[in-house]
Length: 263
Image (tube, rainbow, N blue to C red):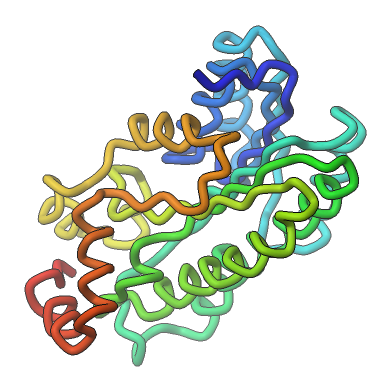
């Protein structure tokens, strides 16, 4: 059983979806929780729930991860409140199912800022603090899409592939300092993510049998904390598909563009 009593956990994207469930899951293990997202009202409600679960501290700090200054200010506030952070979980992100030729530059830039650059900066600032004390864990929520890209997700897949590559190098750099980096690569999750990615609701309805339950996924992720887990891929069927993709890339391309293309 994971015991996070006395630990401080920062969760980004904590106002809804997987981020919210991760915040609740670490609170249930006794952690002090710092929740951040853009919606202060939602953060306050989730923080209230966390305090009930943990009987520890929980604070919601509004932060737009698309702005460097706000991320830096977030860590300054965490330092003041808790004198550091033990675990950081980057769960913020968004996507949109749009063909690459039709994707606007503004959306591409925003997605890179939130899904990739913010993850890198949050990870860097956390790593600097954790390496000084010789312990800590960084958990970055990437995606199976970063390993197996499909049509209409070129930019989203690229943002997640970048996170996976970044984590692979960061993990090696931080290992001597006693800091672990875990990359989580989920397939579709039954959350509000798809209200932006696919407002029609068609995609989520099509993959309903494969869609992950955010509560269950959060529990699995939290159960791996402190175990020096390198990577977590869910569902297992998609993880197996990724392995097949590496062994037979041409067949993988055909499958990704036909059989597994639900968009």
